[in-house]
Image (cartoon, rainbow, N blue to C red):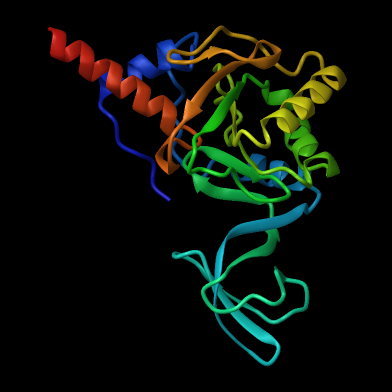
Length: 244
């Protein structure tokens, strides 16, 4: 996993107008984050597993199956590891995997819903949660609970303790069919942890969303996690440069 490269103007614009930082962004040497803090977030999931629908059945034999998502190929030899059980080669299948994704995106700890990550083809909502460092593990625990078993989403939390002074310290990517369920989950979490969110304003390019949280619409895989913020800020810099 490598962090994306962006010019200084885009980074400064994003830090000031999207992340809404009070000062300069901290120097984060490791895109994979602070190992101790990441381990703490992983423990907060209590080993939660879910169904990942991004796989297709490749080949199978007596008691074994190969599945692939185009990048990763898995060998499955235990009962109940994928559904539907009567799938044939080429069919889409769901594989039961840990829901935590520690290195899926630079500088983020990602947690998928019980039914996998967000459905992408028709656009998806992005909800920005300014969760505090002290409440980050509780947020991960809430999104790992049974209330998320039937949902598809991606929760992306800062993976360094030094990177929480921002309006987007947590981001949720969720499709339209699951957004209501995710909002209910956030609402229940907010009632239990009334000081968990430190509201900092509305990031550039977002609108006022449910529960007073910023919201935007993402398009495609490149907008997942921090991709949307980088794209919007780069577009703003490019447009400003074109007018100069």
